[in-house]
Length: 152
Image 1 (cartoon, rainbow, N blue to C red):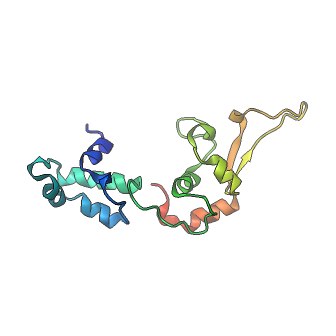
Image 2 (tube, rainbow, N blue to C red):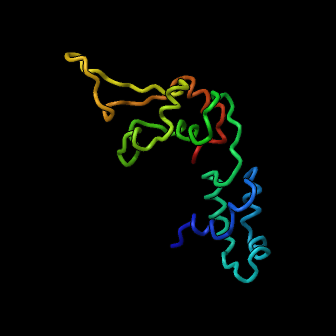
Image 3 (cartoon, rainbow, N blue to C red):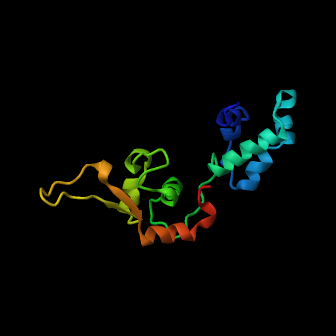
């Protein structure tokens, strides 16, 4: 099976200006467009190109970042996508401090709260693996204001 990101790269997808929307991405990934660019070397089927377009759109690859409604200044699209799905542990059992690269900025912006338990008898804070994460009301409002941008 071909690696889809490698196949996308072979098309020269990210060589030009960022795409403004899904329609532009889908227009790029057509058999006719590939033949126009690569001639006889364009050996992708339309089904393969559709898969590449789906993947590129789903992952916002080389696309202009959308404007987020209600997001605090400094919260970018990647942080927003994490906000939509953040949990204390992911499906693989990894703790959010291991898989989330934006948890600190989300916390600073008031979009998530981190539970940092303290041992009652000693007053010593528990280590990170005991921390929990919860989306705040403000965070939920940002997520709900941008439903079309949620990750699949």
